Length: 275
Image 1 (spheres, one colour):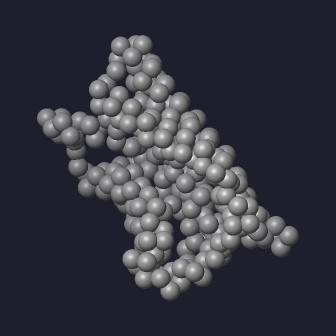
Image 2 (cartoon, rainbow, N blue to C red):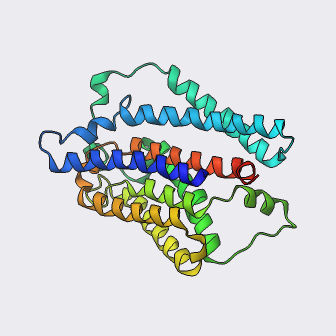
Image 3 (cartoon, one colour):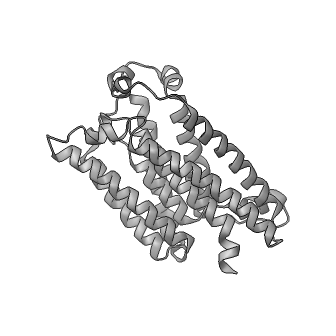
């Protein structure tokens, strides 16, 4: 049930994003549509704020329900409490932040990144780079690498038990890969930004290996999300110039948060749903 709801919600916003990209590519009149939707204070910014609140609500709901049913798991409760506190802080900070000047939000000059070296680029885009690196590492490369290498959890080790309880499903990994698929595949403003593309291609390779070796992990929603991933790749490949002109990270934040919310709900509520 959780997987179904997460996939439907993700699909809805994915269609919304794809339509914005395609319309900007094929229409002269609305060529700036995706550019405007990506700006701070516009559509994707508002969606991200809403999803942040839903993450907080889900974590608090788990804590309340688990205590009411006397089925609280210390590890899960600790992680849920940390997530609730962290995202509540982020949500309050974002909501209470002063509104940005409308004219300034319209400026995005990709050429400003062209001549930056690696460390200068890291200084300018440190949040985007650190966040994407965290997502790639903990929600894509490590889980898929773990499965591709046929590793197993050791129940005798406490750290393995913790990892097993919150290990992301294949469906969650695919959702995060879809989020990372939303990037220009060519025409990037800086050579070092192609590291993002390399990590994305590595993610696809690991996903393919897991698909070949462990097909039993893939069911209806996994196959459906794989199909969505293929569609997104072809559309973004055709419309890369649109993303290169826009601040596409706001779109990725939304899909990161949606996939993160799906991951939270899976390990938080799976026991209650089965019951």
